[in-house]
Image 1 (cartoon, rainbow, N blue to C red):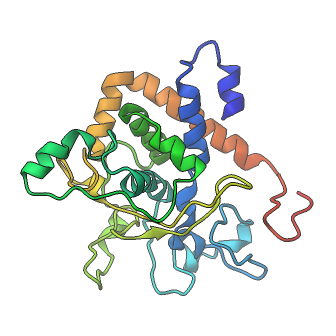
Image 2 (image 1 turned 60 degrees about the horizontal axis):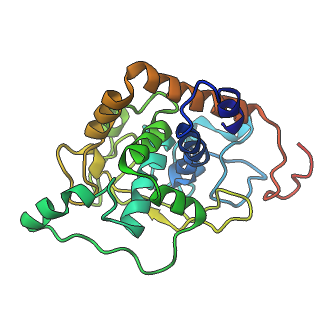
Length: 266
């Protein structure tokens, strides 16, 4: 992503570079979800919860989006939605009154009898979380949109897919949206080599609801419509295409992963 932005330095707004690079680092975090990790099977599978890629033979069709212990299956799962919802989880954990979360609605929510949650007290934000917390509201919405849209499946609306409709709710948490259920979690993983691992993040589907949520503020659709008004459809599509192009280029690289055993050669 940095290479693409560098090549376009003369024709791209300077403030877009950190937004695109942050979205690039964050966009696949949702692959840590148990539904994605459980899809990767076979002998020699590393015992990890952060595998993003695997050889073709490691994806048996009968196990696609099935938890490793076979307790759950989410056939409509989209990892990019989980990644985007994890951004909201960072704000909710460390700064619920952030301008991109409940900040503009504190007085309204209080008047309606809603209690504004307090920040978590069990640890300081990691480096990448600090970058998220430093964003203003429009920039946060753009990062979240780019993360969610990079496969073209999740854009203006967060809607359940046909596969979600067949899910049997056995615990009262409701049906999934694109394979993500209320209260799902992403385990603690490391995004940057040598950096402090992200904490476990709980996913909240409130952005999919209409109106102002007492947990996540403005709805997803309202956020995206604001981005369309701010950037216009062609500029927004162009920015989205840049992240998609960077994702494809990175996926083609054959780079040894120092965190995996026996990964000394590509």
